[in-house]
Length: 464
Length: 173
Image (cartoon, rainbow over all chains, first blue to last red; front, side, top):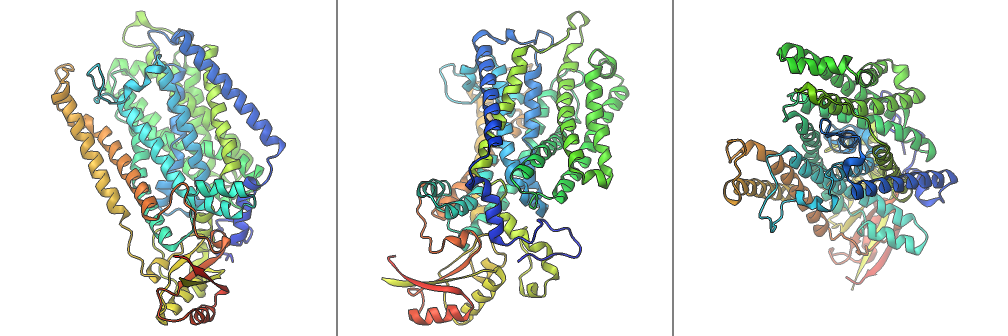
């Protein structure tokens, strides 16, 4: 059923029939989970519980438990928030922007990347909520008629953030779930047990693969992608406004929106690589998520990593060229001040290390890519730390200069979000198909369609 | 009570050929069910172009307009605040929220319209004739009700088009 193109690397390996694709992808859903899965889930769940404990402890006693002070009001909490939101950009980037660009390799990784997006955005959303200090009053941020007769300040980027991230989470969830419906139908029909059939039928909304439904589903997916593409770009743009619209030296820069968006895609792809290199091995999906996929993602990493590198250098140049002494000092202090170690970790991990990917051998080397992806995750975390902490700790008034060190509570909350993230991820890989089966089937033969005598009769391809 | 005849193909190109062959004979096709969207099938079946994009456009326009008007109302009528003497009607700073609402309304209206129009939703029990249509079968369904010919003729036509495993059931619909 598969045909091999003489020119392009196949999107999936192993001459799969449609039935093979179904069986391979849903094997983890059908099979009993192994020991490793239970161990992973238990560790994640315990970590999540510890994090929740630390959050409750913070809310009970107040933000005074953290290392933040009058000078550095945004510590790890906002660093982690921006880091998680950045990671949460890639799923919808893959499924929306790569769909509009007709990149067929996206079909093998979009499902897992979108799931990852949802979990990452959920983790991200936690931080500003905790940082408000009074979590039970968190609903004050939404505009609703209230006895205080006040509305939220729509001029504030912090409120734009509320709208952007809420919309992003909801629309990503919709996009992800709409894509899942046909695959849940497949699982329903493959399940033998009656109650599982019922559950998956409920989840699949009674999907039956009718041509009319597919036609609507396709046109909906395309429009959703068209809506989600500017949405992805808007979210991190607005996150960058949190900084850029202030008048803190080091934050007040017009380069922030594109710089943050490319940084987000950069870190997101790194996280997808970290997870997928392990997942493809653990779930025997090596023929679906191939070295070719890893290479494609690595190419995106070079592109976005280089944009990030140029942005760093542009920032330095503009600080010098602006002639503003505060701006200049902020950047000299970043590179040579007490937090220089963080700055140089960021530079090494984000600017220098991805440049190694120009070498094809390294791009296609899984162990190297895995290591590099961890490097980038660390580097991107330090980028946010550098932006948040070093810009704040020495501002206009030298008498209020201070240093910041996180306390164990902040560290535990951060680790806790990893627990939350991985708990959801472990459940996801056992309950839902990790690869979009229907989409992979639809591209399984198309990479070679042109070279087939039989396909001449086919209408020219529409959408993707 | 009328009869439903169905059979399946194992390749999407065979399916497309068969659909054309049946239509040339003047047989109306009740439904085609496939494991993934087959390109060219919607034109072969003369399916009308989905109007979901229009739903999205209208809902998006409503969301964006409401978002913008609401913010304008809040800052000029509802509770005008003096923020450093800046203009109360600060349209540029209302754009992010209005944009997010545009996307939110458009996406959800379209999603809900899709489910309602396709009669999909939690608790729906589909009339599945072949459990492999979500796996690797491309199924053609013919209904006696839509066609002027009898059931054996439909079966014959479907077999002639190359369908495998042709069966018939009595539909209650």
